[in-house]
Image (cartoon, rainbow, N blue to C red; front, side):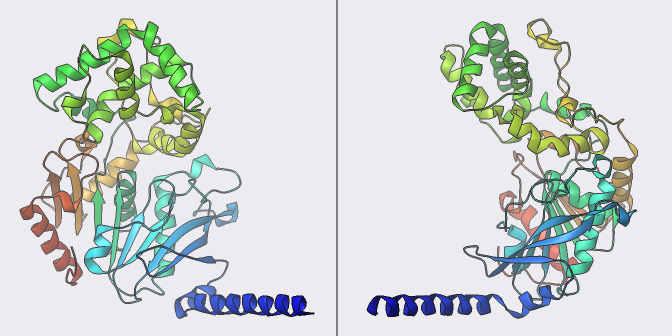
Length: 429
């Protein structure tokens, strides 16, 4: 009998705790979301943040033809106040939760992170590749913005990093009046599947000595493929990395990619192994700068939607294979192969020309942030002085360039523009 009573008391305690937890979740904001049709809302915990949710919001696969079907788009929300500013993060890939946005800290703002269509959990049962476009993605962001503006009445700042920043700029071009300000970090505007400006930029980076060390390192690898290709294959095997191409072809891609990866994230020139370095040190340096994950079944599958976009509208970069021609297995190493099989579309140059024209002629209240040494800075927006916009290039910065890494003068100018455009004082840095 005592055992039964103890079990009953324990059960009642558990039910009471569940009741308290359930009621704790039902805040005013939570109740408001429950009123929206077909939205799934899940409270989540995020250390250092307040009221946070994962939202699954229904979207049309084709916004021009709503009858074509729908998918659920994942959105993460960190709530401060319905009247506080909103930092609207347009991810270019999958979203992994609430991130620590420097803009949100500045204004004590709400943060909304939108996962890009066809990434992460934001995928229909079958990917319709023809709708993986700038126009459709912008329509996704517009729909979410209009929905959440029913709750959030403060100023809106669209932002994103790299492809996310590019996405924010494309969204602004398609829907100029949705947000008050756009802050795009390291966002390229490419004009070809293999935009030659990027290779030209890479060849100018660093001093003569550093450029020579990079080239010597590449030659060391391709001239000694008898050792390095088997060693590379063994490395991938040990790391359980399943390559989708043969080891030699993949190794060639690694070597050709090396200068881009080197400058993209600021690899120090003195970290390049010298002529007397061991083969093990040389290989370890290569895979540290250019991870083989990109060429695995998992990596290729993750980035496949991006490469479809790059091949069709966004553009990308290629390689200068000429110096290494006689050492390479193939005559050409295009990045177009990483897209979906059989879905190589003719490049549509009109899209990015439209975006670029808008940014140069009508793109007001936009801040562009680039890193001086970042290869993607080769395709940065070229402002003509026709708009109320600001571009900041962080000295010696790479693909991690942000406001915190700017000079004091640059940072002060960014703060002045943001406060002027938003009519809101920066409360924290």
